[in-house]
Image 1 (cartoon, rainbow, N blue to C red):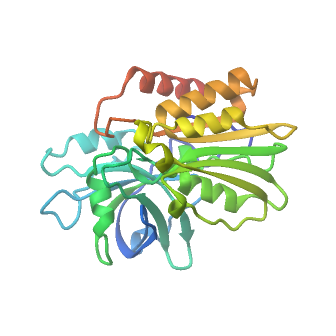
Image 2 (image 1 turned 30 degrees about the vertical axis):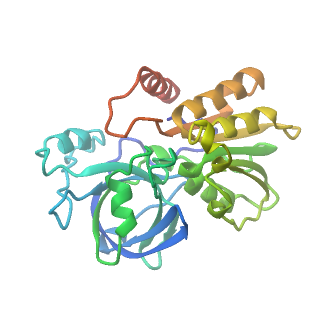
Length: 317
């Protein structure tokens, strides 16, 4: 993942991040394949929401646990110590960990909303933005499918890295492109647009039942792409429809800031198209590979994943 922005940065990336216990307040289906879970609890009283696509890490309990065993991040402010602390927990007690986008924050109620993609094994969609990441249902999806009031999770963050603002309205228009795993972030960006800001979104979902409505002060056009129409040819979930739609699009005139999210190889293809064939400055393209086709979040990173991480580090230097 990487971010490019000319706007002032948010909290320093060296700031210590809290590890919290949160509780499900409510869960409701947005569509056949998407559920919204509202999380609350005293630990969210000081939750800081600073960017439309801000992420947290959620810790899911192992079978037999009512609450996950949480790692201790350390008192020296090193935010990277959480991983070492997590790995120090015995494997049979170590919680499953996934990254999610905060869909909404209600400071008055002390709650946050997180959207989860539900999988039935027939579709490859999913990812860090809304959960999953593989056609086979994983632990986070299983948890979300049955989540109800009183269920307990752990939360780490929000990430200071994602507290850097998306530059809304600074270019002549904004391009948003992603699959359903990117919908939480795309939705928050659209809803945060200033009055009159122009945005064009291309979103690949399973079918029309997965489309969502967004309230926005901006001038927004959303093109919905239905993956079910091509499921029979083996391309379901690989992002081909999304990449093809963006490649074929007639872009509006003027400067553009692009936000890309979804399956990692599709996101890389879109970024290459925008920076290569379209000639867009790479600093004006934010890209996030939320999930990897045929791989889970627990699988080792591929060479492409490592190359993406190196790009992120180079951009931060």
